[in-house]
Image (cartoon, rainbow, N blue to C red; front, side):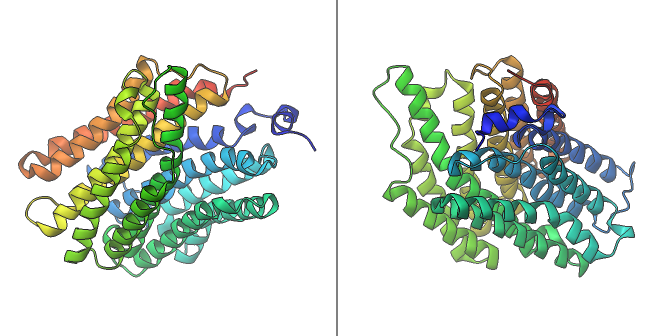
Length: 397
């Protein structure tokens, strides 16, 4: 049987289809920037998409169920062959999966002229196929420890189904069960996968630097306890988002994951932006939990939507960007170092997150902060597409 490298070398078609991370990282970043730009035009009355979703619902769906699944797909199509020792999906089969994802984005954007069931089927086709491919690889490779990742992907798909049902019923989907479940699935992915790779990457780099104060290895008893607390908090928030117990559990989860993060020697990574940004992105997970818990317990302090954006734009947005930059450099044979352009990309997204939080804390200046948040997001992801696009779209030795 050919190795993964041999399988990729045999592919003589477009370079973007030679490995899963290439099309999904590039197109995911383009979509993140484009969807935000389109939403700004929609809010300004300059664009009227033929979508059955209201503008806020379209915006929420575009990021939770459009952008996030694209990056998850690129990551999993790259990671699963390493987990199972089996071959990656390359060439035209990969192109077909990309086409289904693009068809889903189009279907939701023109859903006003499509039956709701057809819109949902087209939107769900790519993640459903990914789940099937992943299940096949895990079973064939007997890689049972990563069934948890497949489970989180299944929850994300279920959340998308619920979102479509709520939207078709005329409910305000961004505050519905589907959006909360989808966001919760994304946060658990950060907690589980990020909780593996951040301390591991950090340990490898610190060992090369000759440092002695190394991170605690991942998935110790405390890590598992912190994950269970977070899961309980997310389930309670999903079911009863205004319940005092939900707020208390979110505060507990935030505290547990701050302690978890403190065990990974993040302060020592400040000289390495590729690593430091991962620690910063993970920090936004407990920060979001603490702010959301506070918003529930002290309703006049902060709108829950602002706290949720710390998770969506912050923990998920910045962590996925961190993984995309590192994986692209590593898999295209580049040095694992962040140049000025990459640091600027990180800074733009971080400014976007902080501006969105400020809009929730300072309602009198909210409009200006909304504009700044949108601009930072667009610059960050358009910047990734421009800086890393040449690496993703061309062949490397």
